Length: 282
Image (cartoon, rainbow, N blue to C red; front, side, top):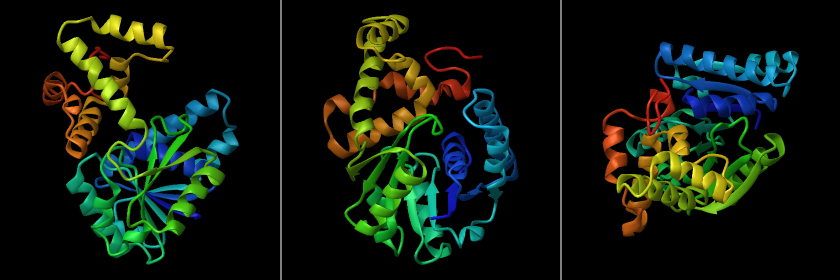
């Protein structure tokens, strides 16, 4: 798989594009507006420049990585891609619409992957005429730094498809790769999201302050950051979508998203990306 397409040049999409290009793949990012395309390029340039400053790659390597990345507004330009990775917002209707379009454009042998963190992969597969070539590739933020990729195999996914993306992520991208069945949350979010929403409930009930909750989990459990700080980094909207997906899948009471989390999302307090979440970043 030498030619890679990425749907969306936001935080996740740009990160996926960067690691693929750094590994030698030719990458084309699809965006919906020129402003978004320009922002994606800026995001990539800043991230790659930081890696040079940190001594993780040379300037020559950085320049070569950037030359392997292009941005387009035309979905038809993805026709020759060997693998297309969708990194659109966690909205099921949007993702299924994207997969239906990709199915009509990408060459018949091309693999279509979703970076969804919680939506069952089978729902995207059913929007196509190639369900055997649809698979989950769940990267973690920030993609250039986080080593894990979850490969999610839907009931309809061909074994050859799973093997192809597993080998690409492991051998080409040099990631730690795990295989998981197609259930909401996969491995990481199935364990992580209930922990995060429990922290929100603890704050909501006045049981402890946000500072003390975060400090306790860092000092007592050895975590690099507290749960509320982590939600701010991930995004409150992303956390809410994942929590709702888990509840929709399993229906267990402890998975119901906390009202405080919903109210904060409705208020636009989405975390670091919005300048304010549980903490103020303005």
